[in-house]
Image (cartoon, rainbow, N blue to C red; front, side):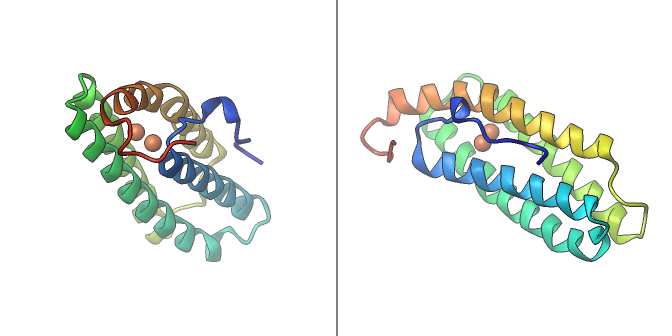
Length: 139
Ligand SMILES: [Fe+2]
Ligand SMILES: [Fe+2]
């Protein structure tokens, strides 16, 4: 497993935590597909799931930040955009038949996700909880 979920990175907002766990699972799926050599056939559906999942999740977070007028919104959105571009680039390189995804790339994705979920999103969530308390499902 490439990324072991750690409850200390929970945000306490139910839908966001569910999304984060889903993203961690997809990164692990990508890693496993590469490890067992069946990578080629399995990578594309994992890529599209990752793209869809990140898009939906980032949009959700960005809407929250807008509603809260979060002070760090601009920087946070920039990080989301960077990751979307990275995934799109990886997918298109893969479609063109360029070599399998390297371990270095996977490590990059994992480290980005870990830092984003455990550090960057935590700042956002503190804001959201403060301003939208009662309108969000927490657990
Ligand atoms: Fe997030
Ligand atoms: Fe985020």
